[in-house]
Length: 104
Picture: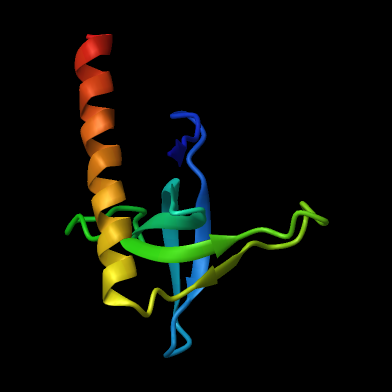
């Protein structure tokens, strides 16, 4: 299951990497896999573009008691968990392509 964002409303987040540099990322979607939420981010260069198609997966959680609190992102440490998220994202992309074909 995926939470989709409006096409004309591109959401972005700024991530601080381990080396202290900042990367602006477009939010592609939030996926739920085995009752856990994951966010899919598309890293953007200084021009707001992504030329290599690389996406990043992070665990994602919000504080249900405070919707204004910043969501928490975490690294996915387990290879099996990562593969499940990658498979869910592939399925999400397949569904997007199918929806585009149906809409035409």
